[in-house]
Image (cartoon, rainbow, N blue to C red; front, top):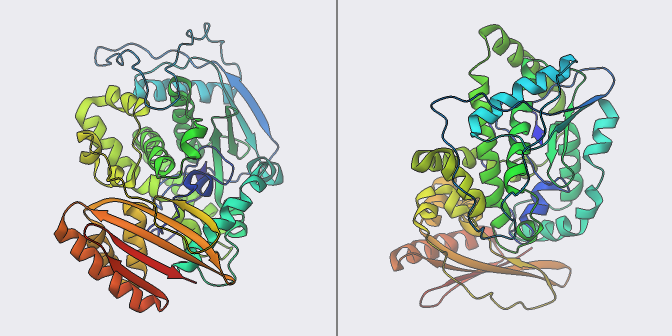
Length: 435
């Protein structure tokens, strides 16, 4: 899914509970693509809907292209692709089919992979697009309501904010296109392709290509109670953004100007609905941190190293923020889940990213980032207590000195919060906050 850019630089990503991060980020759409302010997206262009299914042509061979390594056993339940190559492509005979075929060739060349089957590209406008986008969104209301309680206890959203409705409003106004790997749907908001929309279509086609080879629909990842969904989304989006950025460089100066005008026009419309900053910030992490992570993979071993990451995906935000942790194969510290003092509403891993931003909300981003550096592992639990929600988080760090610094930051945070306590054991700092 692709969201409209904004006129201003994006706010720093806000933390999200790790209990069901994939659900919270996606709200029913299997793969979410949220672009930062400088990224292109799909424009709302008046007109009727259209669709096409095109068998993309195979990439033209060049001496610089290397074949990906043979599939290796994955660490997740997603099996390596065993499908046979697609039959010879049909000859495109409409402008849309020709555009999709050309973009597909570019994407395939960038990823050094071939499309295995046709990708259906559908153009929808107005309410038809919104209806398709939000078709299954109600399935996520209960889990989003749980996350809302955690965020409120940590003073990350104000009383009275309906997190689910905020997400729905945000996506309804700002989403410009999406690819759903569960159904293989690729939907663009508009009636025709322009320089502006082609850039995002290249991004979405990269999702489709990777899905055909590595299976992006992994329920076990998005249902995990750790950061697997967030980290996997960062890999997915980092790959597609690298393709998108490469395609953008092929645009002429005139096309880039046209794209910028259309982006500004859509941003003005999509930014008219006031929403809590956390709603936009929650979804930005994969797009702000993913490209750097994928860049490290490409430097390590080019496209085959990226392919291997799909077979052995990252599972923590620490790995995304510091790709060296992933490349060295460092595992997080196992921290027992702290006890709850009432009926449990959520539990899981909070993560380095969320830790940094939660501390930064009350103490400033520099303090939060410094205190979170050296994150070793954590677990949290949330429970209902007398009409409010309480959260208890237990943290381990990589060294005693870093644990000392984290403890000091949490004690400052607890004073600013007003309804929080901090306890220190030999190797763990535990924080309890209610609200």
